[in-house]
Amino acid sequence: MKKVAVVILNYKARENTLKCADSVKKSDYENLEIIVVDNNSGDGLAEEIKKVVGVIFIQNKDNLGYSGGNNVGIKKALEDEAEYVFILNMDTVIDKKAITQLVIAIEENQAGVLGPKILFFDKKTIWYAGGTLDLNNVLGGHRGVDEEDHGQYEKIEETDNVTGGAMFVKSDIFVKIGLFDERYFLYYEDSDFCFRAKRAGFKLMYVPTAVIYHENAKSTGLGSPRQDYFITRNRMLFASKFLPFRTRFALFRETLRNIAISTKRLALIDFLRGNWGKGSF
Image (cartoon, rainbow, N blue to C red; front, side, top):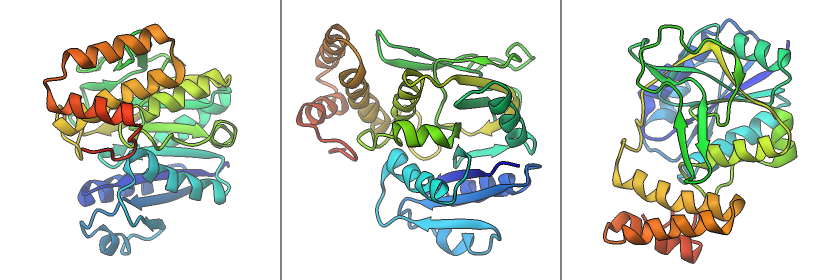
């Protein structure tokens, strides 16, 4: 049985992180390593996690963002020779059969990156049933989002994008293409990683037999100024790395048209200055 390392990154969401880790511990897959990384939250997780048997805890001295914080956990998983790494948002819980189904799917389909079916906590509304990535506008999307799940997305199939909210990765990919690009800090680092993986010849697949439950945008706030800043800046970063001048210029012009909005103005300034990571927000 191949080793799976589950990486859960915490930032000011102690109770959610503990629930997530508890759901992983109840998994029917036996060869598991659970790695919880805290991004200098100061929320008391360090004290609580000590009571949880079988969890490796890593305390970061600073908030490294989604990309940097998860990279710490991924490096530990690779050091411990895990064949697969399962990156989970702290505000998720997993079905007990999910990891087993992901291992079966990745081996049967010779895939590299898998995304499970993700439902909201009501267990009937879809959050993710495969991902899209519109490269002309650098916009990621979730197939089926907000639809009621009645079995309309039950086929295991290739997908354009796997959300970082629940990303199951063959460890060899990290060795070949590297970890998350820490310049993003938050948002689009998962799309960047998937784009690089696909370009390197690895298959990305959606696996509906594995089910995850997700409470969206717990740590940043859905539609918050913080979210707007990082998405605006990081769309331009993604385009500058991979896409033609026409697309890069279109994004630049789009941001200029919205320059009166303070978050977009700040995002543009930081992009031009190369102020990555936390940026100025």
